[in-house]
Each structure stands twice: as structure tokens, then as C-alpha cells.
Length: 349
Ligand code: NAD
Image (cartoon, rainbow, N blue to C red):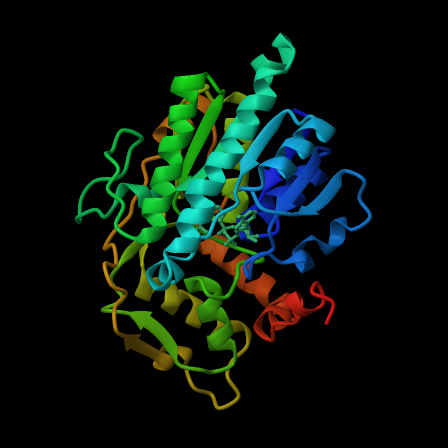
């Protein structure tokens, strides 16, 4: 694969993926609507790179997508574009349906039409990879893990919209033969994550000595994966995944939310103690739980590991240390997100 059309490549995972792909010599057409979650600062190092073309636009804009496909003739489409924050989906589900369901449908139709017109060799090699979440499987009890055959049981408007998009991707393979792949990944963390998500939110608040909000009793469990390992998994599935299959991606790193927060506190106390000598754990404040909050997610990624040889390179401990060090070294990036200036410049004000 030489040329990829990546959607949502100014967001957290998409941008990490694009930076890595371009560093590895691939050409990327990066289509992103630049919602609040899209941040061109993250892509600043690619500004003059001829292997990266950024286009501001919507995955649901069929004329634009068709034009980009014709102009750049990519070997694959990798779809990261989505509304991605569960809390926002509770406050306003419509945008989630618009992008995650209707937008994905538009993208699929354009990809199908482009793929159908390709010469046979190129059509055979073409791929549409859809990036999805483990949240489509619902919530687990204390035992067991999600496998690729776990029935879908999404509980939030976000996960319901992602589940719908996964089903559309599946249907485009079964109905039209489009060579699709789907990845369902656990919670990601790492550089360039928007500070509304648990780990960067807690890092920022802990750095400035503010109360650290933790939902409910803090005992909800997530399986955490460093974003670089997720991106490597996507690349591996793109290269060698079996068409029409889905692959679960996880870090085998289940942690209670409270443990994640305490880990951040300890790492920051060791690196940058608060001026008043206070231990950051004392800033933890339990807040009213999120409605319908899933209790536990855990991913079985044996299929990806056994079939395609992918393994996570980071443990939760090494990944968290690296992440804390990254946020400490990149306070300017976070500062521009927190004060909103990352958006203002783009809007010309
Ligand atoms: P994000 O919110 O950081 O980024 C999403 C990007 O999509 C943003 O740059 C945004 O501007 C763009 N976008 C939104 N609507 C668009 C539209 N209509 N057209 C074009 N671009 C649009 O999200 P993320 O955390 O990077 O997640 C990326 C993908 O990975 C999502 O599909 C998400 O469901 C999935 N995922 C995320 C996680 C996680 O832990 N963050 C885990 C598993 C799967």
C-alpha cells in the first residue's frame, strides 16, 4: 500500500496514525471536518511534507469524497472520523448519528463506486478499513472478555452509533463485495488526546492542583492500550487482515478508573511535586456517575495476535510513564487546546 485516504486524521488516534504512516513513507490524503476534536497543531510537523495532503471536509460530503478518490486513487480508505465522546453523545446524540452512521454510509457508497471502477488487480488489493470500539459489545460482569463473536449490545448513543456503522461496513461487504476490514479497540491513551477524555483530563487537572473528578465509585474497568500500539495494529490489519473480518484490539491491561487516576497522581508527584507539598491523590473527588455507565470492558485480541502476529509493545506502566512525560514536555500543545487558540487561528480570528 502506498497511498491512503485517512478520515478523521486531525483527531487523537487518526493524527497519531497519520504521523506514523507518513514517517514510514506512505502518502496520506487526510480528510477531517475539524470539529472541536480536530487539531491541526498535532500535524504541524507535516506542514511542508509532500506525502501529506490535508483537506477540510465532511465524510458525508459525497461530491468531495468522490473527487478525492478520483484525484488521488488511494489503495485504501481508513475511517477514523467520528464523534467520539460518550458524555457528549448523552447530551446530544444527533451529531453522532449524522457523522458516525450517515457519514459512514456516504463514505462507504463513494468507496464502493470507486472500487467497482478499478482495474481488477487494483480492485483486488483495495481495502476499506473501519476503526471502531469495544463499546459496541456493551458491558461485562466480573468474568470474561469480548471476542469477535460477542453479540453487539451498545448502551450509549455513542456506542449505538458506532455499532450501526460497523453493521453498515459489514453489509457493504456481504451485499456489494466491498473489501472491508473492521477493528474494535479498547480505550486508547497517549500523545495528542483531547483533554475531555479521562487520562489527559486528569493529567491537566492534577498538574494545576485542581480537584480530580472520578465518576461513581471509581471501580469501572477499562482495558487500556497505548495509541501507538493501536495504530500498529491497524497497519497490520490493513496489510494482512482477511477481507470481511473484524479484529479485536486490546492491551490486556484492565484497570479500574480509580487505579488509573492514582497512577497519574503518583507519576506526577514523582516528577513535578505540587508547590504546597500536597499529594495529588488527596485531590480525588467522586462525582455523580454517568448515566448508563458500562461497568467493565475487556478485550480478547487472540485472533489478531495469532493470525497476524501483532503484540502491544507497551505495558500499561511503560505507556503511562511515556504519556506523562509527553504531556509534561508538550504543555504548549495542551495549553492551546485548553484556551481554545488551536481553533481560533484556523478560523482566521
Ligand atoms: P477524536 O474525537 O479525537 O477525533 C475524531 C476526528 O474526526 C476529529 O479530528 C474530528 O474533527 C473528525 N470528524 C468528526 N466528524 C467528522 C466528519 N463528519 N467528517 C470528517 N471528519 C470528522 O476521536 P479518536 O479518539 O481519535 O477516535 C478515532 C476513532 O477511533 C473513532 O472512530 C472512535 O470511535 C475510534 N475509537 C476510539 C477509541 C479511544 O479510546 N479514543 C477507542 C476505540 C476506537
